[in-house]
Amino acid sequence: MLPASEVVQLSRLQFGMTALYHFLFVPLTLGLSTLLGIMETVYFITNRPIWRTMTQYWGLLFGINVAMGVATGVTLEFQFGTNWAYYSQYVGDVFGAPLAIEGLMAFFLEATFIGIFFFGWDRISKGAHLIVTWMLAAGSSFSALWILIANGWMQHPVGAHFNFHTLRMELYDFYSVVFNEVAQAKFVHTISAGYVTGSMFVLSISAYFLLRGRNVAIAKRSMTVAAAFGLASALCVIVLGDESGYLTGLNQKMKIAAIEGMWETEPAPAPLTVIGFPDMTTHTTKYALKIPYLLGLIATRSLHEPVYGITDLVDEARDRIRSGMRAYSALETLQKDPNDKRAEDILDANEENIGYGFLLKRYADDVISATPEQIDQAAWDTVPDVFTLFWTFRIMVGCGLYFLGLFTLAFYLSLRRRLAHYKWFLWIALLSLPLPWVAAETGWVVAEYGRQPWVVDGLLPTFMGASSLTLTNVWISLAGFVLFYTALAIVEVYLMVKYIRLGPDHLFHPEGAK
Image (tube, rainbow, N blue to C red; front, side, top):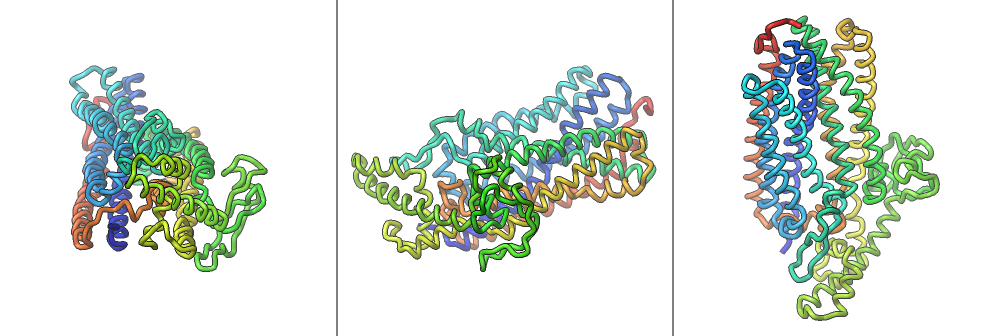
């Protein structure tokens, strides 16, 4: 029995809210941990106390952020068992492996080095503490790697097959899952975005100190480090984002078409739509401003391969749904007679499309007897919300280009030792503080919302993955999460503001000013 549509939508809302909230802390953890390593490396080389003070101060803010990230991350994973039970049962053999490794290896590795980082300053040697700091940064990235391997498999499932005896997806090639090209591209892109977030955080808070005329020596040095690291990271985000776009064009053609609001397949190479207004009712994108050839180069890296439009991809989905119906029919036969060789051959030939057959469960009591109208409805379900994807993608890209310009300017001013001389620049740096989070959150909306209607692309529809809960139960848990996360947000903001206002001079007292 399928869960009620209201339960599915509310479960999606709950998971989306908690995931986006948790991801407020992840990029800053990734970025600040690496910046701490850079600052402490300078302290190790120069032995100047000011660099130790910088490492300790930014480390304090890092610690507050990590504590909140852990609190929100633990509750997030429990939802797979509570709100998404069938998803966990159907693909848990594959999805659970990287999550288990992240929890048992990467998370505990990171937690161990966090403790030594904070309490080991005067208990271990400078060299040993430097190694700990870099291991802390590596542990943060290692933790993100396994999460993104799991998520990358949801975007591009490889290394697993459907077992008709157990009615589950089962892992047969762990190597393919780990080195899934989509997962690896997501990892390096996400890590680079975290570096940008950490750099912007240091740049913005340092600008605040300079505008107040406080902690000038530390603020100048911090801004210089952030400017250089931020520029390199912003360049990486753009280059690696291009790689993600190319892989999406190969593996998730509907997502690319929706992002571009491209309803019809255009002659190769396809133009890129800079701005427009997608209309889901008329299946058009109005007032579109396009750059010739650019989308074809990004999505196919060629001048002759087409980028398919939504209408053609819906036609393809109809064919895949019919194939899925044959797979579903064969599966029913095998449930009655597991030794039916002919049914097994039919299932093997159509296995990759069985998920498309599942799409009909929303409209037909008997999938095998679905009408052409029901097949058409299911085919159009493969189109995500074009308007939402179109604009969130452009917000993300716009922020990325802005970061490139801002960090280029910051790096130029740092080379001329003029970072503290222009108040207009300091104000721009300070006011830009929220933008990395805007970019990160919209990026995840593009990645996850663009995968709809699938919880695992092409394999399991979202409406099938949810638990059969009552609407009241989901409302209660959602209300609990809202209250809990609101309390955490208040604590986070209070602590961050408190220690930013205090500044490093009130917290740490190095033997020398420089």
